[in-house]
Length: 256
Image (spheres, rainbow, N blue to C red):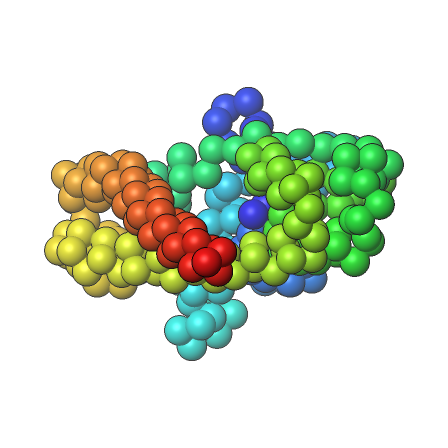
């Protein structure tokens, strides 16, 4: 997760550390990519550099191309060619359509003192560092931001029921890994039966897509959002019901 704010026009704004974390790159790479012409400079407000959703998309694209064996120089030339031909704007627009609305969270920001008061003496500095590593919080000086109020409230509920915060964070890391696997499976199906069927053979095939094909892809993404969530929610509910039934049956056998 990243600490993201709205810019008033529906787009996201990210601080340097947050956009780097969301893109999975090192902070120092941002300046390097800017110097090499791969990444436009951020917009500055005083001493704060703000990065946009387009910056995030570019960073993800750069990482993808580096993973395919492209050199930094080759990526710069490719991005330039796409910009000249209009393909890059189509790619950025498609990425925004495919990723928007998946995460709709309310952020919560508090001071470290408020955080300690909220969680009590059981929470430690090590727990905060682990939560930051997992993306559950971002720390900026004395301020701690939770990108998801829902996850914060769920964590508090478990802590108040006596579950140690370290155990909750371990469970969170496990859930993240499982969620990533589920997402990979859904994206694989989408790629095979929607993207490939539309004729997009890799990033270079974007120019060949017609407006109708692009609309078909974005409509398919819109249809996938509720389906994916409903499938995961339903299957988890069924699994919990089976597990709780088994636990109750075990307790009843123990009582005899």
